[in-house]
Structure formats: structure tokens, C-alpha cells
View 1 (cartoon, rainbow, N blue to C red):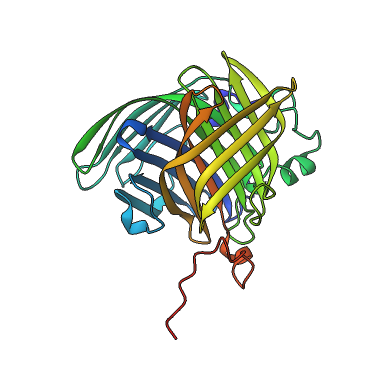
View 2: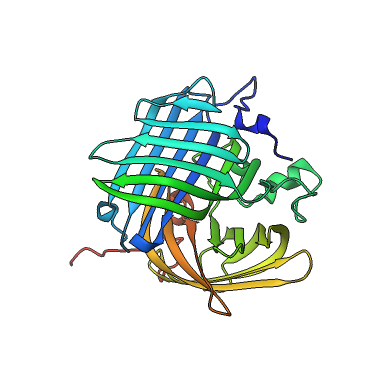
Length: 333
């Protein structure tokens, strides 16, 4: 169970260099075709913090096509995780496990000023009272987290983001349901697990999220459901299974189809297409295909969310990524 104490550092006494605590705050502005995020990685074992702020407004595999990027990997580790400011202009105030304030004053007339308010109880993937697929044994829980030890402790939280952002001088008001998350545990940069983190947020209260084990290959057979939920009319229904299908152009998703079956046997099915696409290097070792997806239910309701699919370089180099997926540029012979 997640409590307000989990907004504080969980640093072990014998902290290793690869220990990490992360926060991801999504920013969806679909009416402007704009997707952004603020991402924090705290590495207590080496005394460094990462902060990554990005905005994307198109479909492109080129990082230079992004609207704005400010990523810094060697900021000083703050003393407190629940309330801090970094030299790059970013700050976080965790008022509780379900209430956060994110501010950022960057460069090129770009700022973020957002409040995140939870629309549910934090979805602790290791609490069997919340997640029906949470194994009782700690070793099994980590093995089946979907992201190995990086998700040794992890929760997802559908939230409402309110406030405004300014991107290269243009102001956008924000008032939308989104999904944020928080994780802590060993996060080595060798042998990262490929995974998919994907959600859909509808204004009528339907909120869906899935964590999937991911083996690139034939669409429809790549994904194995690890954890997830559907929130309907304010009630969280833990997922017990589901299916995913992603058609791609290279690494980038072109169409999405997701079904999450909840513990009551109800199938929640949606289909989607990207509004924006990018390749994000959250870690130098692991590019991820990230999309803001426009989702539709069978009865025509429209919602928005984020898809992330990771493709670790050490696992998929050496000819190990299917040719139909790999982005290759053969040199002229």
C-alpha cells in the first residue's frame, strides 16, 4: 500500500550506484497536438539527479523534430525527494501521495506550472489488495513487475493535470486527465527489460493503464500483460489479463489496440492512433518509442494517453531486432 511516506527517499543504507527513484509527469494538450513530460531520476548512490523536460508536436523519429528538449543528467541530488528545486529550474512539491506540484522555468521562454491531483488510489503493482496479479513472494513480484528490479516498487496514478505551460513563448492552458508514476529500486543500465507502459484517459471517467512485458516481433503476439487496471465511474478494477496490438513504421506506433480484462471478467477494449510520435532516450542505453495516442471506445468516445515501448540497445543490437521493426539506413554501396 502506498502512503504519504512514499513521497520521501527510500535510499537503503548500503545503496548501490544503480539505485534509482523516478517520477514521470505526463502533459497532454491534444487540442494543440502537443505532448510533453517532466521526468526525474534520482541516483542516490552516485549523488546525481536527472531531469528531462520535453515537448513534441509531430510524428517523427528524429529527436531534432521535437518542439523543445532540455535534458540534464548530472544535477546535484536534492536532500529531500518530497520537496526540492534543481539548478535547471525544475522543482517538485509532493503534498501527498496523490497531490503534486511541478514547476519548471527553462530556456527559450519555456515553463511548466502544473498541479497533479489523483483520480484514484495509487495503483501499487505489488499490493494484492489492489492488484490481483501481485505475487505474494517478493522475489516473484520483482520477476513479474514488467520492468525487473526497476519496478521493485512502483505505482501508477491517473490524475488531473491543471495549470499552464509555455513552450518557446506560446502559452497553453492545461486541464486534462493524465497518468503519472513513481518507482524506486535498482535500475541498472545493462540488461534493461523491454516493456510497454501505456494508458488512456477519458473525460467521462474511464481510465485505463497497462504495463506489458514486450518481445518485439509479430504484431499481436509481442505483449504479455503484467499489471494494469480500468477505472470506471470512480471505481478501480484491477486487471487480470488482456491483449495488445501495435502496428509500426519502424519503431514508431502507427495503430494501437488494447484490451484489459478486469478481475470481474469485463473486457475494456479501445483502439487508437498517434497524434505525436518520438524516439526518447530516457537512458542512453534504451531508446523508447513514445506516442500521444488518441483513443476511441467502441461507442465512439474519445480519450488520450501515452504509449511507451522500450527497445534496449544491448538486447536488440547484433541483429536481434526484427528487420521489419528496426530503423535502418543502409549506406550506399
